[in-house]
Length: 184
Image (cartoon, rainbow, N blue to C red; front, side, top):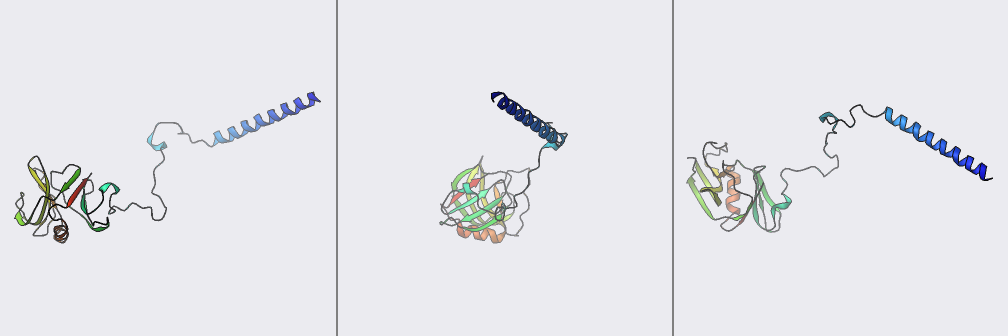
């Protein structure tokens, strides 16, 4: 009886090895020619999620922006958020940065001016300053003529320009001492 048991086990083993070999052969016939090669075309492309509600909103307040009442300025996207004490966004808008960016960090509004001439010679209003970099004052303002054109790249300018409407909203929100959070 032991002899017939070992014969059955040997037969099953041979059948199993043959089946695995056959499946391996079928699988190898369906392998792409470029599998394992180091080229860009072999790399799968990333795609956007199709899950509802999971799309990235560029106007969404960054999670790393802190808490409480604050103005958040993202230098990487040139966007500002006015955030109430309850962490709800009151307003968000795009800005045109100066040629000198503030460093990432937390500041407070230091001075304000209702109307002055900017360092670029443009008449500006609702100036809200919060820091300086190498002697260049950094702050938000709106051009009285409503323009938000890019500044002269050959000059060191710290004015972060917004529309007149957005400038009025920031002026009313950001009084002296209000926190300014600068993110990348």
